[in-house]
Length: 167
Image (cartoon, rainbow, N blue to C red):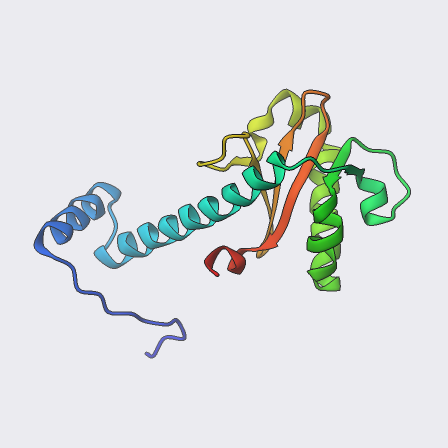
């Protein structure tokens, strides 16, 4: 039966093959399944590197911060701020349907679960290579990069499509 999934063929050296075989055995998985898992992890790592650089760069610049309700033009009180270039550069680039989903995810993460987020900031996925302890929130194929400020506000640093990490 033909598959709709894309296929790739890769050639590996003997050492890499032996390692893959050992890891697959430890995972009780096939070589293909283990390879797919490791490729996915490698791509996620690459995304983290990209968004970490952006977060560090934007956090090192002196920028005005903007409250969540001003950024999304909604009428509710919250503890979310945005860097100016998120509002001026990132949000306008987001398609309307994705924009709504991202806004809902941000509100859900920081409004409804706010006390838990600040008591347990590990709720968001940490970016591995940032010096500012930036974290990631996912909204389908979009990534919301943020930090928790000492004033217990979430500071949104970057909103970007995951494909941008590969450009």
